[in-house]
Length: 236
Length: 292
Ligand code: SF4
Ligand code: SF4
Image (cartoon, rainbow over all chains, first blue to last red; front, side, top):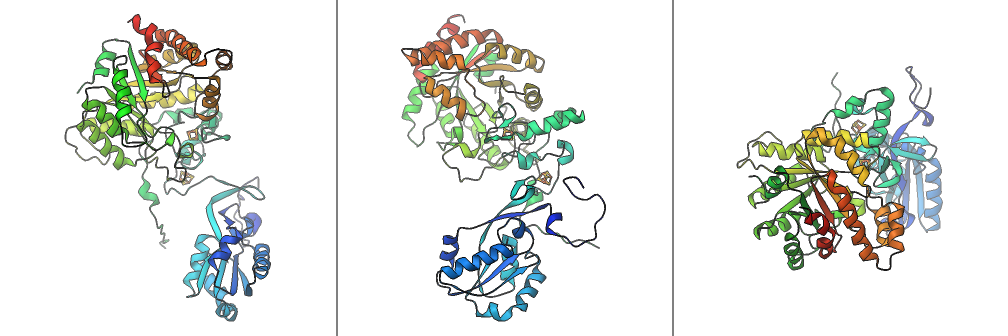
């Protein structure tokens, strides 16, 4: 396997190493978290074993560090749990029921999981729930601790036409017909540390001998494909 | 409706355009005064659209004020702040207010401006915006529904003759023309040779080229522009020329006038960007005008 998904079907349960894209999140600063729990003496802490663990925002380690921080700030921590996938609504409910007494005792639940995880936790309890993370994007992992957004979930993938570099996401303006006037020697106008998405596409298509693709005018995009809230039910 | 600018270009007249920035506020007195003064020297006035993503009065309103006084505006419209409904309704509004020239642009990114927390729109890109303008002219909106009046705009687009890699930008220029662009107003040109190559490249597209000339007011401004304005690079010798000048502003005017004269053979007109010193435009264009 070379820097991507394994080519053969792998039946092992997912582990952190094999998790190659994820919901990238980072912790809010502690003052903001404490302010949100100003009147709450007892706190139950929840982390997530998937994305928030890899992003080091809400795994075992961060839950433990948060516990220390809350105790030094004068809070009592009634207990904690790291849910296997906080966004899995049934699993989140089940894991909280397993710690029922500690959850009941708390004045507030502090969730160190992405926004989806926070909502599946809060859906299972009437308790005050505090979101401890800011959820950023669906990210690829460049290397440990370095994440990059490559796809913005637009609902109508055009990668096949663009040498598998996404202009909807990698171009800050999401331009579909080529670079803007700000492209500077192949660099992006918004950040000269980044290559222009269209320059990357051009280089890739050149290498593949398919620059003719750049001649096609891409019509107006159908943004109804990404209307919120998204819903999908797999028909069997 | 054929606009004055369109007629002049069609008849081979060498045109001059200039850019005036609408005010940040609703008082247009100074904007109008500047524009009236300029009108005597130029064939059309570009009204910028929240240029540099800095919030200002609507370019539609400002261009309409010019049109009302019989001046010839070029309404710049960008995709940054309007979705396809807003773009189309502003275009229809422009037509109803007697504005016939439009410059269809992508727009500088929000991160350059004074409302950095704003949501960038970019529902369409500049090529799709040109298609939209063409569609309205044929009496159809983007949803394929009929619009009355079928406004026939004289539509233009931006081009960057000195951009690298040029072949990549050229694909988009071809698409712009196919989508209905009838003229290009270019980014500031500092090397007339590059403009010559550009003109040669776009000749088969059969589109009018109005080359951009930027007034450099000082070496400091030249450096600022180079590092802060997307797509602009002032060559070092010009910065040095400004640096060593006793009167940098006068040197800037000399440079601009020199570039204007050197660019003239390779274009159908010049677009002067004076960055607030529109009073100096007559001096810059003196030489090229007298040859008219
Ligand atoms: S085109 Fe859409 S779905 Fe495909 S990578 Fe880009 S954002 Fe994701
Ligand atoms: S320079 Fe390229 S990537 Fe950056 S905004 Fe312009 S087109 Fe998009």
